Image (cartoon, rainbow, N blue to C red; front, side, top):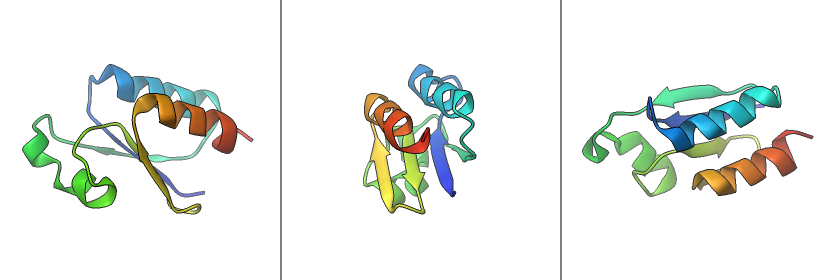
Length: 80
């Protein structure tokens, strides 16, 4: 499984997603992004937005933002 989480250190929404992935034993890599939106070119490239968190499931071809959507995806798809 190949999962990437784009996150900002200290972001409470990113921490929720991180915790959910950890609790369910999902293997993933974290790409830490800069605090300034202007420093988030990689996030923009993969998701079309500069906000985080963004989760990329490379195996399923899924890219999504919004922590609540990601949490639902983790619960329904990745925790299986």
